Each structure stands twice: as structure tokens, then as C-alpha cells.
Image 1 (tube, one colour):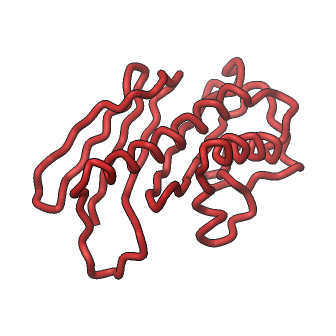
Image 2 (tube, rainbow, N blue to C red):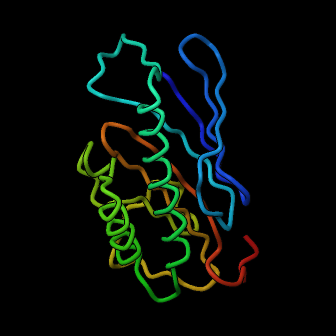
Length: 172
């Protein structure tokens, strides 16, 4: 399988990867700036048997990878902006679902194994892949981690980021 890593920094998103013939690849797609570093793994999948190696052979395949990467990066960025003290992680998750749906993308965890949320949201000491809940209310100074994974036209992307909500009163 051909695996790419995309890095969205404060300036640009850069996709890098290794093609099946071991040639490296780098591109800078057009993406708006993010307020924090975002790291993502992006890959191509279309009902592939486990022993088959995939490579990007067409410009349209690369465009598909860019499109899903941009959808996931935008969703994460907008969820980060939307997060506010007093809202629940379920409300934040539903906002992320609206963005993914508006872009034609589907939540990968929900689609793949029926995850009970559209995104994964962890708060403070939760390690990762937190389940959005009406019981978890965001508070000033919380350390929040959001993981957005999506499928779009047979291409998949996973992207995550952590941030402190408001002022860092707990010195995270």
C-alpha cells in the first residue's frame, strides 16, 4: 500500500510519501492556515486484498488523496475554532459531522466499525480516541484532542490535533 504523510503547519500543508517504486513525493496543496501543527496519515484504499501493493499512478488518484486530506484538515480546524467552554463533546462532534457531510466525506470510524461518534474527542487525561458524550462538558483550560478520520470517494485520511481551550490555567 502506498502511504503518505501530510503535515499541516502554520504556513502550508505538505504531503510527503514514498511511492511503490521507492521514489519520494512532496507536494503543497492549497489549504488555509491552521492555528497549530497537525499531523496526518493519508492512504488510498478501494477493496484491496491484504497482499496487494497500491501506488498512485494517475493524477486523479493524487487529487482524490488531496481532496480527502483537505476535508479532514478543514474539519479539524473548524472544530478547534468552534470549541467553547460549556459545550459538550457530543455537540462538538455533531458540528464536525456537519462539516464532513457538507464536504461529501464520511466518518471513517463510524463507517468502518460503528464508532459511537463521528470524530474522537479526548479531554485532559483521556489518552486517545475519546467517545463524544453529552456528559463531558468542556471547561476553560481543558486539554482537548480531536481526531478526525474520513473517507471520500475511496480515499481515506486521518488527522488529529491537541489544543488548550482558552487560557492554559492548568499549565498543560
